[in-house]
Structures are given as structure tokens and as C-alpha cells.
Length: 178
Image (cartoon, rainbow, N blue to C red; front, side):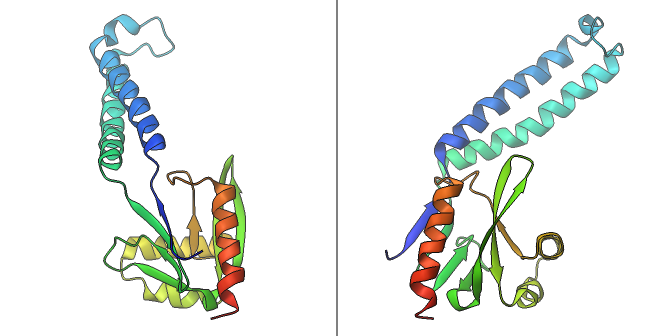
């Protein structure tokens, strides 16, 4: 199998771009026409303007992120003979050796499927993390789900079932060698 690189999905980023653009336009329209929208449930033009401003601010950020993802094809995951590398472009990328991986499990939050990497040394990964926000996130994942690593295929070029298949096949192949 060799080295498998999984990148961000341009199709999903384009969809995010379109949806964000629609919400930015809708927020601007709400702000500009707040006085004419009194017939809806919200009677206060100030509240309607505030919702419009919040919509424009939040979805402008989403618009920026989607454009950035469309321009750059971001490498999200590398699977090879050594293990799994999460966020390989970060300065402190995380290589999880096959010998440290117990297996993979599935988590469903509402309708979103997540993939948990079950490791035999979760405390090591929690203590290794230097970024305070990321460390709290890893601690929360471990406390709630029993694993410090939680992956989602939402922004990847691969779907959840294919990701699970690739990881399980590589675990079987390389766990024996580790």
C-alpha cells in the first residue's frame, strides 16, 4: 500500500463557499431591510439588524476559510508504515505509531460520524501537547469518548467508510511489523 496522503476536499470547500456567500448576502439584506421585516416574528428592527450583522460576521469567516481551502489543497492525514500522522503541516505534527494503536472505533454525534483512534498510552499524548487549547480539547475527547484522537472525514477527500477501511487495513498490515 505504501504511503497514503489524504487531502482536504475541494468539492466540500466549494459547497461551504456557496452556503457562506448566501448567508452573507442574506445578512446584508436583513440589515438593509430591517424596517420592512416587521411582519415576521421579530418585531424589533434593531434585533433584525443585529442578527444580520452577526450573520455577516460569522459567515464572512466561513467564506474566508472556504476560499483558503479552495486555493490551498491542505494535507490532513498521512498513513504509512510508521503510523498515522495527523495535521502533517503543523510544526508539531503527531505521529502515532502502529504499536501504540489498539484499534479504531466509531462515534456518532447527531448524524455526524467520527472516528476514534484508540491508543494504549492516552496520558502520554495529553501531557505531550503544549498548546493549552488543544490540550483541553484532547482531555475533553479522552474524558468523553475514551480516546484523545477524534477524526472526522467531513472536510477530507475520502468518506467515513473509506477512511475506516484504509485505517483498519493498514493497522492489520503494519501492527504485526511494529
